[in-house]
Picture 1 (tube, each protein chain N blue to C red):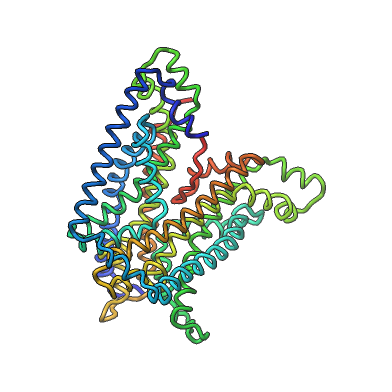
Picture 2: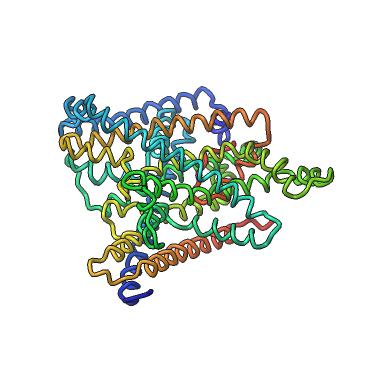
Length: 304
Length: 218
């Protein structure tokens, strides 16, 4: 749908002469792009970038088993736990912002505005550092080493993304026709019941694409576990790169490729969900309004 | 709580300044890249469209930190060496550029098809309909999302601490890990928080002004 609009929004369907010009432009641009790629490849080849040993060594069966696989698992665990915390807190604060109690409203607004404007890396690192300044440390709870690092990574990811999800959900509530809540009140439901039975299910459903798009960002942000040396993918890639110093760049590129595959699969899921929503509900309209409301959250929701 | 307050403010002020200029410079790079990308996206030459798409997908699906690591720690292995702040600006700029390109494209796509058709049926050429009908409208449509990208870039700029650029977060980290422990943890945390909030507030105020300045009189 967007492809067709894209090419015809600015000019008419091309005639024979226009088609010829377009073909020439295509050939020229293809030549330029291939030329640049070939030059880069040639330079890299000269530096021995493509030597097979450099790629094979960091992918040795032992390294895969002891480092890559646990690293991917650690990344996914942080992603899963972070998503759960973010979604639960996001629902709490998103609905807190439209609560009928002023105090809840203020507190939730304060939370969202505050955490939305701080860098995630600062949150993760500060929460990790202030552990032990509350009169106890998490180590006395029996958490130590990686479990403790995971805790603070998840905490940081969850707290930060909850603020953004709360904004997404609030936008979803605002996009919902007001008649829905009114109808609920008219049949005698209390405020809480209206929110729980009528508003929340529809908002969650409508905002699913936007929420998933934010989760893609959360997945990428698990790489920030690096600052507290949580053994996630990027951190492990650097360790492997240090072990095989000839393959340092290759190890990082392999890690980037794995991130790409994970994030791309997740964002394809977003597109799939979006397409289904477009068929059944008014969701894309609400999702389109989001891009201006959510700071930093660049959802793949471009509605032509 | 605020022991050695003047020293702390001096260090954090320098960090804030670094954060601000890194943000603004890399945002300029991102805008330039985004414009090139959007031209490639709407061009009739399909290889250009593919290249723009590949670039966008690449930077949207790889974490910024991985990009910075590959640039600063990885590229010297193949003989490409530059200072850390060069990679910081380039990395942030290229990463954000992909998002800027997408935002601008959705801005062009958000203009109803009828606008372009009306322009063409009035006999305007491609260039005229672009410069007098489509672009003025889409620029206004993309200012708010471009503004939120700028605010997001302030936060993303904290990541360049990993390649040793002394911006606000890195400075505060250095203060807390001070060998003589001259600074109180909570004091530093409060100040660094206030610093980021200030930057975000000022920038979002500027974005709002830009929005008002360019708004249509309806």
